Image (cartoon, rainbow, N blue to C red; front, side, top):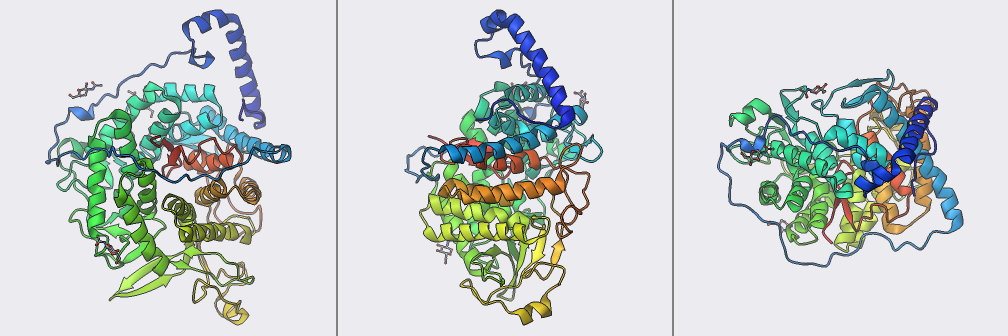
Length: 573
Ligand SMILES: *[C@@H]1O[C@H](CO)[C@@H](O)[C@H](O)[C@H]1NC(C)=O
Ligand SMILES: *[C@@H]1O[C@H](CO)[C@@H](O)[C@H](O)[C@H]1NC(C)=O
Ligand SMILES: *[C@@H]1O[C@H](CO)[C@@H](O)[C@H](O)[C@H]1NC(C)=O
Protein backbone atom coordinates (compact mmCIF):
# COMPACT_ATOMS: atom_id res chain seq x y z
CA UNK A 1 0.00 0.00 0.00
CA UNK A 2 1.06 3.52 0.59
CA UNK A 3 4.77 3.68 1.11
CA UNK A 4 6.58 6.96 1.38
CA UNK A 5 5.17 9.68 -0.87
CA UNK A 6 5.94 9.29 -4.54
CA UNK A 7 5.04 12.66 -5.96
CA UNK A 8 4.60 16.14 -4.66
CA UNK A 9 4.58 19.73 -5.81
CA UNK A 10 7.97 21.07 -6.90
CA UNK A 11 8.99 23.13 -3.90
CA UNK A 12 7.60 20.70 -1.40
CA UNK A 13 9.22 17.78 -3.13
CA UNK A 14 12.71 19.22 -2.72
CA UNK A 15 12.03 20.09 0.91
CA UNK A 16 10.84 16.60 1.45
CA UNK A 17 13.84 15.00 -0.27
CA UNK A 18 16.27 17.01 1.86
CA UNK A 19 14.59 16.12 5.11
CA UNK A 20 14.24 12.50 4.08
CA UNK A 21 17.94 12.36 3.16
CA UNK A 22 18.91 13.88 6.51
CA UNK A 23 16.64 11.52 8.31
CA UNK A 24 18.05 8.45 6.55
CA UNK A 25 21.63 9.59 7.20
CA UNK A 26 20.89 10.00 10.87
CA UNK A 27 19.24 6.66 10.88
CA UNK A 28 22.15 4.84 9.25
CA UNK A 29 24.71 6.50 11.51
CA UNK A 30 22.89 5.80 14.73
CA UNK A 31 21.05 2.66 13.87
CA UNK A 32 22.51 0.38 16.54
CA UNK A 33 21.89 2.99 19.21
CA UNK A 34 18.41 3.82 17.93
CA UNK A 35 17.27 0.24 17.73
CA UNK A 36 18.66 -0.46 21.18
CA UNK A 37 16.66 2.19 22.96
CA UNK A 38 13.74 2.21 20.52
CA UNK A 39 12.73 -1.32 19.69
CA UNK A 40 9.50 -0.11 18.12
CA UNK A 41 11.27 1.54 15.21
CA UNK A 42 12.85 4.59 13.74
CA UNK A 43 9.87 6.83 13.97
CA UNK A 44 10.10 6.79 17.75
CA UNK A 45 13.54 8.37 17.68
CA UNK A 46 12.31 11.62 19.19
CA UNK A 47 10.45 11.34 22.47
CA UNK A 48 6.86 12.47 22.72
CA UNK A 49 6.62 14.79 25.69
CA UNK A 50 3.14 15.32 27.07
CA UNK A 51 2.43 18.69 28.67
CA UNK A 52 -0.90 18.84 30.53
CA UNK A 53 -3.27 21.69 29.76
CA UNK A 54 -3.08 24.60 32.16
CA UNK A 55 -6.70 24.27 33.26
CA UNK A 56 -8.01 20.97 34.65
CA UNK A 57 -11.73 20.71 33.91
CA UNK A 58 -12.24 17.68 36.15
CA UNK A 59 -11.27 19.78 39.17
CA UNK A 60 -14.58 21.67 38.85
CA UNK A 61 -17.52 20.51 40.93
CA UNK A 62 -20.64 20.26 38.76
CA UNK A 63 -23.17 22.99 39.47
CA UNK A 64 -26.21 20.98 38.43
CA UNK A 65 -27.37 17.55 39.55
CA UNK A 66 -26.17 14.65 37.41
CA UNK A 67 -28.49 11.65 37.10
CA UNK A 68 -27.14 8.19 37.94
CA UNK A 69 -24.74 6.74 35.36
CA UNK A 70 -25.87 4.78 32.35
CA UNK A 71 -23.32 2.04 31.71
CA UNK A 72 -22.16 0.69 28.39
CA UNK A 73 -24.13 -2.40 27.39
CA UNK A 74 -22.28 -5.68 27.78
CA UNK A 75 -24.49 -8.32 26.14
CA UNK A 76 -23.41 -9.90 22.84
CA UNK A 77 -25.29 -9.62 19.55
CA UNK A 78 -24.44 -10.72 16.03
CA UNK A 79 -24.25 -7.75 13.64
CA UNK A 80 -24.36 -8.50 9.88
CA UNK A 81 -21.15 -7.75 8.02
CA UNK A 82 -21.11 -4.53 6.04
CA UNK A 83 -18.37 -4.86 3.45
CA UNK A 84 -18.65 -6.75 0.18
CA UNK A 85 -16.64 -10.01 0.06
CA UNK A 86 -13.91 -8.76 -2.27
CA UNK A 87 -11.99 -11.20 -4.48
CA UNK A 88 -8.19 -10.89 -4.51
CA UNK A 89 -7.26 -8.06 -6.85
CA UNK A 90 -6.09 -8.86 -10.39
CA UNK A 91 -3.01 -7.26 -11.91
CA UNK A 92 -4.89 -5.02 -14.32
CA UNK A 93 -7.17 -3.72 -11.57
CA UNK A 94 -4.16 -2.88 -9.45
CA UNK A 95 -2.48 -1.18 -12.41
CA UNK A 96 -5.51 1.09 -12.78
CA UNK A 97 -6.03 1.70 -9.08
CA UNK A 98 -2.53 2.44 -7.80
CA UNK A 99 -1.74 5.53 -9.93
CA UNK A 100 -5.07 7.00 -8.80
CA UNK A 101 -4.25 6.30 -5.16
CA UNK A 102 -0.85 7.95 -5.67
CA UNK A 103 -2.45 11.03 -7.23
CA UNK A 104 -4.67 11.47 -4.15
CA UNK A 105 -1.66 10.97 -1.89
CA UNK A 106 0.23 13.63 -3.85
CA UNK A 107 -2.64 16.08 -3.49
CA UNK A 108 -2.68 15.47 0.26
CA UNK A 109 1.11 15.75 0.54
CA UNK A 110 1.14 19.09 -1.24
CA UNK A 111 -1.45 20.54 1.14
CA UNK A 112 0.20 19.06 4.21
CA UNK A 113 3.67 20.35 3.33
CA UNK A 114 2.24 23.81 2.73
CA UNK A 115 0.33 23.66 5.99
CA UNK A 116 3.60 22.76 7.72
CA UNK A 117 5.54 25.48 6.00
CA UNK A 118 3.01 28.32 6.15
CA UNK A 119 0.30 27.62 8.74
CA UNK A 120 1.75 25.18 11.27
CA UNK A 121 -0.44 25.00 14.41
CA UNK A 122 -2.99 27.37 12.88
CA UNK A 123 -6.50 26.07 12.32
CA UNK A 124 -6.40 26.46 8.55
CA UNK A 125 -4.05 27.07 5.68
CA UNK A 126 -5.11 29.93 3.41
CA UNK A 127 -4.53 28.35 0.02
CA UNK A 128 -4.28 31.48 -2.14
CA UNK A 129 -1.93 33.54 0.00
CA UNK A 130 0.06 30.79 1.73
CA UNK A 131 -0.81 32.10 5.18
CA UNK A 132 -2.65 30.65 8.17
CA UNK A 133 -5.73 31.62 10.15
CA UNK A 134 -7.58 30.53 13.26
CA UNK A 135 -11.23 29.65 12.83
CA UNK A 136 -11.90 27.06 15.55
CA UNK A 137 -10.24 28.30 18.72
CA UNK A 138 -6.62 28.14 17.59
CA UNK A 139 -6.01 24.50 18.52
CA UNK A 140 -4.48 23.50 15.19
CA UNK A 141 -7.72 22.17 13.70
CA UNK A 142 -6.15 21.11 10.40
CA UNK A 143 -3.34 19.29 12.20
CA UNK A 144 -5.67 17.37 14.52
CA UNK A 145 -8.19 16.67 11.77
CA UNK A 146 -5.40 15.26 9.55
CA UNK A 147 -3.76 12.92 12.08
CA UNK A 148 -5.58 9.76 11.06
CA UNK A 149 -5.27 10.56 7.35
CA UNK A 150 -1.49 10.80 7.81
CA UNK A 151 -1.53 7.40 9.48
CA UNK A 152 -3.80 5.82 6.87
CA UNK A 153 -1.67 7.17 4.03
CA UNK A 154 1.41 5.63 5.62
CA UNK A 155 3.07 8.96 6.42
CA UNK A 156 4.27 7.80 9.83
CA UNK A 157 7.11 10.28 10.33
CA UNK A 158 4.78 13.19 9.55
CA UNK A 159 2.24 11.61 11.87
CA UNK A 160 4.68 11.50 14.77
CA UNK A 161 5.72 15.11 14.20
CA UNK A 162 2.08 16.04 14.45
CA UNK A 163 1.59 13.93 17.59
CA UNK A 164 4.52 15.76 19.22
CA UNK A 165 2.71 19.04 18.56
CA UNK A 166 -0.58 17.70 19.89
CA UNK A 167 1.10 16.41 23.06
CA UNK A 168 1.84 19.98 24.20
CA UNK A 169 -1.45 21.58 23.15
CA UNK A 170 -3.12 23.56 25.88
CA UNK A 171 -6.91 23.68 25.60
CA UNK A 172 -6.88 26.67 27.96
CA UNK A 173 -4.80 28.60 25.45
CA UNK A 174 -7.38 29.64 22.90
CA UNK A 175 -8.21 32.52 20.61
CA UNK A 176 -11.82 32.63 21.79
CA UNK A 177 -13.87 33.05 24.96
CA UNK A 178 -16.08 30.16 23.85
CA UNK A 179 -15.85 27.19 21.51
CA UNK A 180 -18.32 25.65 19.12
CA UNK A 181 -19.11 22.38 20.91
CA UNK A 182 -20.28 20.57 17.79
CA UNK A 183 -17.24 21.34 15.64
CA UNK A 184 -14.78 20.81 18.48
CA UNK A 185 -16.35 17.44 19.18
CA UNK A 186 -16.44 16.11 15.62
CA UNK A 187 -13.12 17.55 14.44
CA UNK A 188 -10.86 17.66 17.49
CA UNK A 189 -12.20 14.97 19.80
CA UNK A 190 -13.12 12.68 16.89
CA UNK A 191 -9.72 13.25 15.30
CA UNK A 192 -7.80 12.47 18.49
CA UNK A 193 -9.80 9.34 19.27
CA UNK A 194 -9.44 7.92 15.76
CA UNK A 195 -5.73 8.65 15.67
CA UNK A 196 -5.42 6.95 19.05
CA UNK A 197 -7.42 3.93 17.91
CA UNK A 198 -5.09 3.54 14.92
CA UNK A 199 -1.75 4.22 16.60
CA UNK A 200 -2.24 3.65 20.35
CA UNK A 201 -0.10 6.75 21.01
CA UNK A 202 -0.74 7.65 24.66
CA UNK A 203 -0.39 11.41 24.09
CA UNK A 204 -3.44 11.34 21.83
CA UNK A 205 -5.56 9.71 24.50
CA UNK A 206 -4.32 12.11 27.19
CA UNK A 207 -5.32 15.07 25.02
CA UNK A 208 -8.61 13.42 24.06
CA UNK A 209 -9.49 12.96 27.73
CA UNK A 210 -8.57 16.57 28.56
CA UNK A 211 -10.73 17.78 25.69
CA UNK A 212 -13.51 15.33 26.49
CA UNK A 213 -13.56 16.68 30.05
CA UNK A 214 -13.80 20.23 28.73
CA UNK A 215 -16.69 19.35 26.42
CA UNK A 216 -18.31 17.34 29.20
CA UNK A 217 -18.38 20.55 31.26
CA UNK A 218 -20.72 21.83 28.53
CA UNK A 219 -23.32 19.35 29.77
CA UNK A 220 -23.44 21.03 33.19
CA UNK A 221 -26.72 22.83 32.45
CA UNK A 222 -30.08 22.68 34.28
CA UNK A 223 -31.44 19.99 31.92
CA UNK A 224 -28.08 18.35 30.99
CA UNK A 225 -28.47 19.50 27.37
CA UNK A 226 -25.36 21.36 26.17
CA UNK A 227 -25.58 24.80 24.54
CA UNK A 228 -24.19 25.50 21.08
CA UNK A 229 -21.33 27.58 22.47
CA UNK A 230 -19.22 26.40 25.36
CA UNK A 231 -18.43 29.72 27.03
CA UNK A 232 -15.47 28.94 29.27
CA UNK A 233 -16.15 31.46 32.03
CA UNK A 234 -19.86 30.64 32.15
CA UNK A 235 -18.98 26.95 32.36
CA UNK A 236 -16.64 27.55 35.28
CA UNK A 237 -19.34 29.46 37.16
CA UNK A 238 -22.27 27.14 36.49
CA UNK A 239 -24.03 29.61 34.18
CA UNK A 240 -24.37 27.52 31.05
CA UNK A 241 -27.81 26.94 29.65
CA UNK A 242 -29.00 25.45 26.36
CA UNK A 243 -30.63 27.74 23.80
CA UNK A 244 -34.29 28.15 22.87
CA UNK A 245 -33.52 28.05 19.14
CA UNK A 246 -30.68 25.58 18.74
CA UNK A 247 -29.46 23.56 15.77
CA UNK A 248 -30.64 19.99 16.30
CA UNK A 249 -27.44 18.41 14.96
CA UNK A 250 -25.52 20.41 17.57
CA UNK A 251 -27.34 18.50 20.30
CA UNK A 252 -27.58 15.12 18.62
CA UNK A 253 -24.03 14.60 17.37
CA UNK A 254 -21.96 13.90 20.48
CA UNK A 255 -22.90 10.27 20.84
CA UNK A 256 -20.20 8.48 18.81
CA UNK A 257 -17.24 10.42 20.19
CA UNK A 258 -18.45 10.37 23.81
CA UNK A 259 -19.27 6.67 23.62
CA UNK A 260 -15.87 5.82 22.19
CA UNK A 261 -14.23 7.87 24.93
CA UNK A 262 -16.11 5.84 27.56
CA UNK A 263 -15.25 2.58 25.82
CA UNK A 264 -11.53 3.43 25.80
CA UNK A 265 -11.26 4.97 29.26
CA UNK A 266 -13.91 2.83 31.01
CA UNK A 267 -15.15 6.08 32.56
CA UNK A 268 -18.95 5.97 32.21
CA UNK A 269 -19.71 9.70 32.52
CA UNK A 270 -19.27 10.51 28.83
CA UNK A 271 -21.59 7.72 27.69
CA UNK A 272 -24.09 8.68 30.40
CA UNK A 273 -24.17 12.24 29.12
CA UNK A 274 -25.07 11.21 25.57
CA UNK A 275 -27.43 8.41 26.62
CA UNK A 276 -29.46 11.15 28.31
CA UNK A 277 -29.62 13.19 25.09
CA UNK A 278 -30.72 10.16 23.12
CA UNK A 279 -33.54 9.51 25.57
CA UNK A 280 -34.71 13.11 25.10
CA UNK A 281 -34.80 12.69 21.32
CA UNK A 282 -36.52 9.33 21.66
CA UNK A 283 -39.20 10.75 23.93
CA UNK A 284 -40.12 13.44 21.41
CA UNK A 285 -39.72 11.51 18.17
CA UNK A 286 -43.42 10.88 17.59
CA UNK A 287 -44.81 14.16 18.83
CA UNK A 288 -43.16 16.57 16.40
CA UNK A 289 -44.95 18.23 13.48
CA UNK A 290 -43.51 15.46 11.29
CA UNK A 291 -43.59 12.38 13.53
CA UNK A 292 -40.42 10.30 13.20
CA UNK A 293 -38.22 13.33 12.52
CA UNK A 294 -36.96 16.16 14.68
CA UNK A 295 -37.11 19.77 13.49
CA UNK A 296 -33.98 21.50 12.24
CA UNK A 297 -34.11 23.86 15.22
CA UNK A 298 -35.22 22.82 18.68
CA UNK A 299 -35.88 24.61 21.95
CA UNK A 300 -33.12 22.82 23.80
CA UNK A 301 -33.58 24.90 26.95
CA UNK A 302 -37.20 23.85 27.49
CA UNK A 303 -36.90 20.51 25.64
CA UNK A 304 -39.51 21.44 23.03
CA UNK A 305 -39.52 20.18 19.46
CA UNK A 306 -42.18 22.44 17.96
CA UNK A 307 -40.59 24.07 14.93
CA UNK A 308 -41.77 23.00 11.52
CA UNK A 309 -38.84 22.55 9.11
CA UNK A 310 -37.32 19.09 8.52
CA UNK A 311 -34.33 17.96 6.48
CA UNK A 312 -31.47 15.50 6.31
CA UNK A 313 -29.32 18.40 5.13
CA UNK A 314 -27.68 21.33 6.86
CA UNK A 315 -28.28 21.73 10.61
CA UNK A 316 -29.84 18.28 11.15
CA UNK A 317 -27.70 15.83 9.14
CA UNK A 318 -25.49 14.06 11.67
CA UNK A 319 -28.32 13.77 14.20
CA UNK A 320 -29.71 11.08 11.85
CA UNK A 321 -26.35 9.79 10.63
CA UNK A 322 -25.32 8.93 14.21
CA UNK A 323 -28.29 6.61 14.86
CA UNK A 324 -27.15 3.61 12.77
CA UNK A 325 -23.54 4.45 13.52
CA UNK A 326 -24.21 4.23 17.27
CA UNK A 327 -25.84 0.85 16.71
CA UNK A 328 -22.64 -0.16 14.92
CA UNK A 329 -20.26 1.25 17.57
CA UNK A 330 -22.20 -0.46 20.35
CA UNK A 331 -21.99 -3.78 18.51
CA UNK A 332 -25.76 -3.93 17.97
CA UNK A 333 -26.41 -4.02 21.71
CA UNK A 334 -28.75 -1.05 21.90
CA UNK A 335 -31.91 -1.67 19.87
CA UNK A 336 -33.14 1.87 20.51
CA UNK A 337 -30.82 3.23 17.82
CA UNK A 338 -32.29 0.84 15.27
CA UNK A 339 -35.83 1.84 16.21
CA UNK A 340 -35.11 5.58 16.11
CA UNK A 341 -33.35 5.20 12.77
CA UNK A 342 -36.13 3.09 11.23
CA UNK A 343 -38.89 5.43 12.43
CA UNK A 344 -37.00 8.49 11.18
CA UNK A 345 -36.29 6.94 7.79
CA UNK A 346 -39.94 5.94 7.37
CA UNK A 347 -40.80 9.62 7.63
CA UNK A 348 -37.95 10.55 5.26
CA UNK A 349 -39.21 7.99 2.72
CA UNK A 350 -42.73 9.35 2.89
CA UNK A 351 -42.04 13.07 2.93
CA UNK A 352 -38.49 14.04 1.93
CA UNK A 353 -37.32 11.79 -0.89
CA UNK A 354 -38.08 12.88 -4.44
CA UNK A 355 -37.24 11.73 -7.90
CA UNK A 356 -36.24 14.51 -10.28
CA UNK A 357 -37.65 14.92 -13.78
CA UNK A 358 -34.69 14.38 -16.12
CA UNK A 359 -34.25 13.98 -19.90
CA UNK A 360 -33.26 10.31 -19.57
CA UNK A 361 -35.69 9.56 -16.73
CA UNK A 362 -32.72 8.43 -14.61
CA UNK A 363 -33.72 6.33 -11.61
CA UNK A 364 -32.12 8.51 -8.96
CA UNK A 365 -33.28 10.18 -5.78
CA UNK A 366 -32.62 13.30 -3.74
CA UNK A 367 -33.65 14.21 -0.23
CA UNK A 368 -35.27 17.65 0.14
CA UNK A 369 -36.68 19.82 2.90
CA UNK A 370 -40.21 19.53 4.30
CA UNK A 371 -42.19 22.23 6.06
CA UNK A 372 -45.35 21.48 7.98
CA UNK A 373 -48.14 23.96 8.42
CA UNK A 374 -51.48 23.05 10.03
CA UNK A 375 -50.69 19.41 9.47
CA UNK A 376 -50.00 19.88 5.73
CA UNK A 377 -46.51 18.75 4.67
CA UNK A 378 -44.91 20.68 1.80
CA UNK A 379 -41.77 19.36 0.14
CA UNK A 380 -39.22 21.83 -1.10
CA UNK A 381 -37.34 19.82 -3.76
CA UNK A 382 -33.91 21.22 -3.06
CA UNK A 383 -30.69 19.30 -3.24
CA UNK A 384 -27.84 20.12 -0.87
CA UNK A 385 -24.28 18.93 -1.06
CA UNK A 386 -24.49 18.36 2.70
CA UNK A 387 -27.38 15.90 2.20
CA UNK A 388 -25.22 13.67 0.02
CA UNK A 389 -24.12 11.70 3.10
CA UNK A 390 -27.67 10.26 3.21
CA UNK A 391 -26.91 7.71 0.49
CA UNK A 392 -24.16 6.22 2.63
CA UNK A 393 -26.35 6.34 5.73
CA UNK A 394 -29.18 4.40 4.06
CA UNK A 395 -26.68 1.84 2.74
CA UNK A 396 -25.17 1.40 6.19
CA UNK A 397 -28.65 1.08 7.72
CA UNK A 398 -29.67 -1.38 5.00
CA UNK A 399 -26.65 -3.55 5.79
CA UNK A 400 -26.91 -3.35 9.59
CA UNK A 401 -30.65 -4.03 9.67
CA UNK A 402 -30.86 -6.26 6.57
CA UNK A 403 -33.23 -3.94 4.69
CA UNK A 404 -33.03 -4.23 0.92
CA UNK A 405 -35.26 -1.18 0.52
CA UNK A 406 -32.73 0.96 2.36
CA UNK A 407 -29.92 -0.37 0.17
CA UNK A 408 -31.93 0.62 -2.91
CA UNK A 409 -32.71 4.09 -1.59
CA UNK A 410 -29.09 4.61 -0.53
CA UNK A 411 -27.83 3.58 -3.95
CA UNK A 412 -30.24 5.93 -5.73
CA UNK A 413 -29.39 8.84 -3.44
CA UNK A 414 -25.68 8.24 -4.06
CA UNK A 415 -26.27 8.10 -7.80
CA UNK A 416 -28.27 11.32 -7.53
CA UNK A 417 -25.29 13.20 -6.15
CA UNK A 418 -23.02 11.61 -8.75
CA UNK A 419 -25.47 12.72 -11.46
CA UNK A 420 -25.33 16.29 -10.18
CA UNK A 421 -21.52 16.22 -10.23
CA UNK A 422 -21.54 15.14 -13.88
CA UNK A 423 -24.28 17.60 -14.87
CA UNK A 424 -22.40 20.84 -14.15
CA UNK A 425 -19.65 22.25 -16.37
CA UNK A 426 -16.99 22.05 -13.65
CA UNK A 427 -17.94 18.42 -12.95
CA UNK A 428 -18.87 19.42 -9.37
CA UNK A 429 -22.24 19.64 -7.64
CA UNK A 430 -23.33 23.02 -6.21
CA UNK A 431 -23.92 23.61 -2.51
CA UNK A 432 -27.73 24.14 -2.83
CA UNK A 433 -30.02 23.89 -5.89
CA UNK A 434 -33.60 23.10 -6.89
CA UNK A 435 -34.83 20.34 -9.16
CA UNK A 436 -38.05 19.69 -11.04
CA UNK A 437 -39.71 16.67 -9.48
CA UNK A 438 -41.68 13.71 -10.72
CA UNK A 439 -45.05 13.19 -9.02
CA UNK A 440 -43.88 9.86 -7.59
CA UNK A 441 -40.67 7.93 -6.93
CA UNK A 442 -41.43 5.61 -9.86
CA UNK A 443 -40.45 8.36 -12.28
CA UNK A 444 -41.95 10.38 -15.14
CA UNK A 445 -41.25 11.37 -18.73
CA UNK A 446 -39.31 14.51 -19.54
CA UNK A 447 -41.64 17.42 -20.20
CA UNK A 448 -39.83 19.98 -22.36
CA UNK A 449 -42.64 22.49 -21.99
CA UNK A 450 -42.53 22.32 -18.20
CA UNK A 451 -38.75 22.76 -18.32
CA UNK A 452 -39.13 25.83 -20.57
CA UNK A 453 -41.57 27.37 -18.13
CA UNK A 454 -39.43 26.80 -15.02
CA UNK A 455 -35.94 26.27 -16.33
CA UNK A 456 -32.94 28.47 -16.85
CA UNK A 457 -31.14 28.01 -20.14
CA UNK A 458 -27.77 28.59 -18.49
CA UNK A 459 -28.25 25.61 -16.21
CA UNK A 460 -28.28 21.88 -16.97
CA UNK A 461 -31.67 20.39 -17.80
CA UNK A 462 -33.62 19.45 -14.68
CA UNK A 463 -32.01 22.12 -12.48
CA UNK A 464 -34.22 25.23 -12.57
CA UNK A 465 -32.32 27.15 -9.91
CA UNK A 466 -28.99 27.09 -8.14
CA UNK A 467 -29.38 28.91 -4.83
CA UNK A 468 -25.78 28.56 -3.66
CA UNK A 469 -23.40 27.78 -6.54
CA UNK A 470 -20.22 27.33 -4.48
CA UNK A 471 -18.23 24.20 -3.66
CA UNK A 472 -16.17 24.42 -0.50
CA UNK A 473 -14.25 21.12 -0.80
CA UNK A 474 -17.00 19.13 0.87
CA UNK A 475 -16.81 15.33 1.23
CA UNK A 476 -20.42 14.06 1.38
CA UNK A 477 -20.74 12.89 -2.22
CA UNK A 478 -17.48 10.90 -2.31
CA UNK A 479 -18.33 9.61 1.19
CA UNK A 480 -21.46 7.87 -0.13
CA UNK A 481 -19.70 6.70 -3.30
CA UNK A 482 -17.02 5.16 -1.05
CA UNK A 483 -19.60 3.38 1.12
CA UNK A 484 -21.44 2.11 -1.96
CA UNK A 485 -18.13 0.81 -3.32
CA UNK A 486 -17.13 -0.96 -0.10
CA UNK A 487 -20.55 -2.60 0.17
CA UNK A 488 -20.91 -3.69 -3.49
CA UNK A 489 -17.38 -3.97 -4.90
CA UNK A 490 -18.62 -2.26 -8.08
CA UNK A 491 -15.43 -1.09 -9.79
CA UNK A 492 -17.29 1.40 -11.98
CA UNK A 493 -17.58 3.46 -8.79
CA UNK A 494 -13.81 3.85 -8.76
CA UNK A 495 -14.03 5.33 -12.26
CA UNK A 496 -16.74 7.68 -11.05
CA UNK A 497 -14.61 8.66 -8.05
CA UNK A 498 -11.64 9.31 -10.31
CA UNK A 499 -13.74 11.59 -12.50
CA UNK A 500 -14.90 13.49 -9.41
CA UNK A 501 -11.37 13.76 -8.06
CA UNK A 502 -9.98 15.12 -11.31
CA UNK A 503 -12.80 17.66 -11.61
CA UNK A 504 -12.24 18.86 -8.06
CA UNK A 505 -8.48 19.07 -8.49
CA UNK A 506 -8.84 21.00 -11.73
CA UNK A 507 -11.14 23.62 -10.23
CA UNK A 508 -9.69 23.95 -6.73
CA UNK A 509 -5.93 23.44 -6.90
CA UNK A 510 -3.91 26.53 -5.92
CA UNK A 511 -0.19 27.20 -5.54
CA UNK A 512 -0.45 26.30 -1.83
CA UNK A 513 -3.18 23.68 -1.61
CA UNK A 514 -6.83 23.55 -2.60
CA UNK A 515 -9.43 26.27 -2.34
CA UNK A 516 -13.19 26.42 -2.21
CA UNK A 517 -14.68 27.90 -5.38
CA UNK A 518 -17.51 30.39 -5.76
CA UNK A 519 -19.45 28.96 -8.70
CA UNK A 520 -19.51 25.40 -10.03
CA UNK A 521 -21.87 26.50 -12.82
CA UNK A 522 -19.09 28.58 -14.37
CA UNK A 523 -17.51 27.21 -17.51
CA UNK A 524 -14.84 24.72 -16.54
CA UNK A 525 -11.76 26.34 -15.08
CA UNK A 526 -13.34 29.76 -14.69
CA UNK A 527 -14.71 29.48 -11.18
CA UNK A 528 -13.17 31.97 -8.79
CA UNK A 529 -11.24 30.47 -5.90
CA UNK A 530 -11.70 31.57 -2.28
CA UNK A 531 -8.88 31.84 0.23
CA UNK A 532 -10.22 28.98 2.31
CA UNK A 533 -9.30 25.34 2.77
CA UNK A 534 -11.46 23.87 5.52
CA UNK A 535 -9.81 21.16 7.58
CA UNK A 536 -12.34 18.60 6.30
CA UNK A 537 -10.61 18.64 2.91
CA UNK A 538 -7.69 16.71 4.45
CA UNK A 539 -9.73 14.93 7.12
CA UNK A 540 -12.57 13.71 4.93
CA UNK A 541 -12.57 14.47 1.22
CA UNK A 542 -9.06 13.30 0.44
CA UNK A 543 -9.35 10.42 2.92
CA UNK A 544 -12.42 9.03 1.14
CA UNK A 545 -10.76 9.46 -2.26
CA UNK A 546 -7.67 7.70 -0.96
CA UNK A 547 -9.64 4.85 0.61
CA UNK A 548 -11.73 4.14 -2.48
CA UNK A 549 -8.44 3.61 -4.37
CA UNK A 550 -6.97 1.45 -1.57
CA UNK A 551 -7.32 -2.26 -0.75
CA UNK A 552 -10.70 -2.76 0.95
CA UNK A 553 -9.21 -3.96 4.23
CA UNK A 554 -7.68 -0.53 4.85
CA UNK A 555 -10.24 0.90 7.34
CA UNK A 556 -12.74 -1.89 6.79
CA UNK A 557 -16.27 -0.85 7.63
CA UNK A 558 -16.54 -4.10 9.57
CA UNK A 559 -13.83 -2.88 11.94
CA UNK A 560 -14.44 0.86 12.08
CA UNK A 561 -17.30 3.29 12.14
CA UNK A 562 -16.50 6.75 10.79
CA UNK A 563 -17.77 9.81 12.62
CA UNK A 564 -19.29 12.69 10.69
CA UNK A 565 -15.79 14.13 10.13
CA UNK A 566 -14.61 10.77 8.65
CA UNK A 567 -12.64 9.82 11.75
CA UNK A 568 -12.60 6.01 12.05
CA UNK A 569 -13.49 4.76 15.53
CA UNK A 570 -12.79 1.12 16.30
CA UNK A 571 -15.87 -1.07 16.71
CA UNK A 572 -15.84 -3.70 19.45
CA UNK A 573 -14.78 -7.09 18.05
C1 LIG B 1 -7.35 17.05 37.52
O1 LIG B 1 -8.16 17.10 38.65
C2 LIG B 1 -8.62 15.84 39.11
C3 LIG B 1 -9.63 16.06 40.22
O2 LIG B 1 -9.16 17.03 41.12
C4 LIG B 1 -7.43 14.99 39.51
O3 LIG B 1 -7.87 13.71 39.93
C5 LIG B 1 -6.51 14.84 38.32
O4 LIG B 1 -5.34 14.14 38.68
C6 LIG B 1 -6.12 16.21 37.76
N1 LIG B 1 -5.39 16.02 36.53
C7 LIG B 1 -4.21 16.57 36.31
C8 LIG B 1 -3.58 16.28 34.99
O5 LIG B 1 -3.64 17.26 37.13
C1 LIG C 1 -0.78 29.55 22.83
O1 LIG C 1 -1.04 29.13 21.49
C2 LIG C 1 -0.33 29.86 20.52
C3 LIG C 1 -0.73 29.32 19.17
O2 LIG C 1 -2.10 29.37 18.99
C4 LIG C 1 1.16 29.70 20.73
O3 LIG C 1 1.86 30.49 19.79
C5 LIG C 1 1.54 30.12 22.13
O4 LIG C 1 2.87 29.82 22.35
C6 LIG C 1 0.69 29.37 23.14
N1 LIG C 1 0.96 29.86 24.47
C7 LIG C 1 1.24 29.07 25.50
C8 LIG C 1 1.46 29.74 26.80
O5 LIG C 1 1.31 27.86 25.37
C1 LIG D 1 -43.89 6.10 16.81
O1 LIG D 1 -44.70 5.86 15.67
C2 LIG D 1 -44.33 4.71 14.92
C3 LIG D 1 -45.17 4.69 13.67
O2 LIG D 1 -46.50 4.96 13.93
C4 LIG D 1 -44.49 3.47 15.80
O3 LIG D 1 -44.09 2.33 15.09
C5 LIG D 1 -43.63 3.64 17.03
O4 LIG D 1 -43.77 2.56 17.89
C6 LIG D 1 -43.93 4.93 17.75
N1 LIG D 1 -42.93 5.12 18.79
C7 LIG D 1 -43.25 5.38 20.06
C8 LIG D 1 -42.11 5.57 20.99
O5 LIG D 1 -44.38 5.47 20.44
